[in-house]
Amino acid sequence: MISVTVVSRGKYGERAIRTIGEKTDFEVIEVPIPEDLPGFIEDTEPYTKDADLTSDLVIIFALHPDLTPAFAACAAESGAGAIIVSGSDTSELEKIRDRYRIHIHADEICCALVPCGDRVIDEFARVLGKPRFGISVADGVVSDVRVIRGSPCGASWWVASQLVGTLVADAPSKAGLLVQQYPCRAVRGTRGGIHRSAEIHKKAVEAELALIREVIA
Image (cartoon, rainbow, N blue to C red; front, side, top):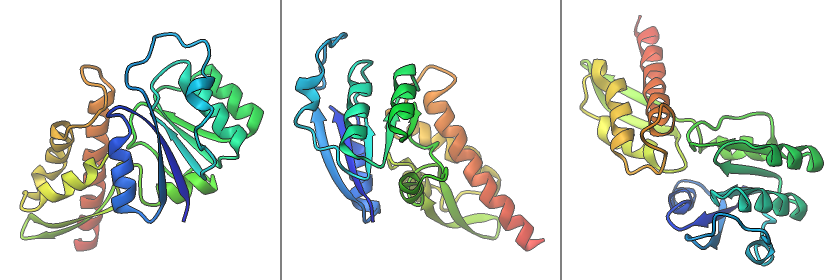
């Protein structure tokens, strides 16, 4: 079992905290920061100085160009085993990786994480990250869906609950649509963000259905 600290900012991070608490046996700790922040923060210490970042894994939802690397550096200095950042990779994060020799996964969506050879990330990604489903089919209809690995935001479990009774031919596209209907925090209005999350879930359903067809054949 690993310990996880989530640096949350308003609504960002709350679903990950809930999903970790409900779907895993990981210990989860929240470090909240104010939702409203100035665009530029010269002195980040008031935000980081009292934060307990000694967990095996630190997930950062600061979504701020000054606070994100500040929390990442503090986590590395505190002995965290690995870091996940909500947002794009940056040169500051690269410097922290090199300096502390720590694994940092940075991505705009939380459902793209896969095992990578890092002990902490692999333990987390065993249950949370890029979705994997176990699907049962009867008479051309989805009869049961199990989440083997689900998105930290909880979208995968929503998809699974809504796919039962769907025609097999319609299941992948419906999975993608359901992700977009789920109140996900991913960016909308771009080619990435929520559309990428939808495509990931669609392909996860397609992959499992393809395996079922192989077994039947």
